[in-house]
Picture 1 (cartoon, one colour):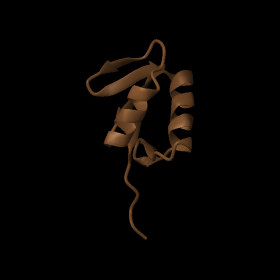
Picture 2: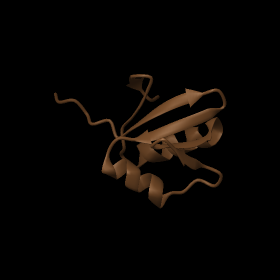
Picture 3: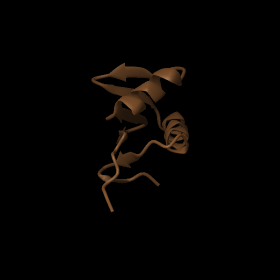
Length: 74
């Protein structure tokens, strides 16, 4: 069984979620689904935790694979 490609990683910093695309598919998804109030910082999309969680759910529903702190996002 091969390893799955990690499309994006999520880092939590206080009340913010930083979603960093790792593949062109994840980057395209983030560009196609802009989040009001979110902004780009050092290659990561920054948003609040609630909206970040909703974005992660939508990204995984779209078939993208995410990781948080080295563990599968659940």
